[in-house]
Length: 52
Image 1: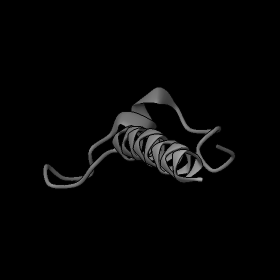
Image 2: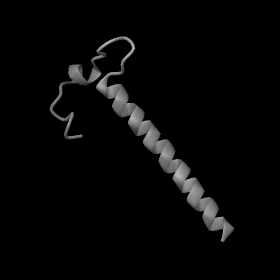
Image 3: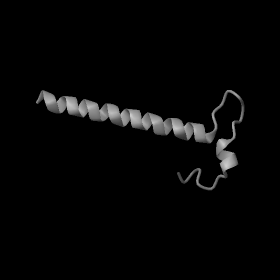
């Protein structure tokens, strides 16, 4: 967060080229992937608990 905290909304939403993501799109993607990974980890841990 420190790396982007000083940027304006225009800067974080700027797409450098049509085929490249904005900073905000990258951050959103990382957030979504983190949620998916956490859910998968929780499901795997829960599955392991049921095996014991």
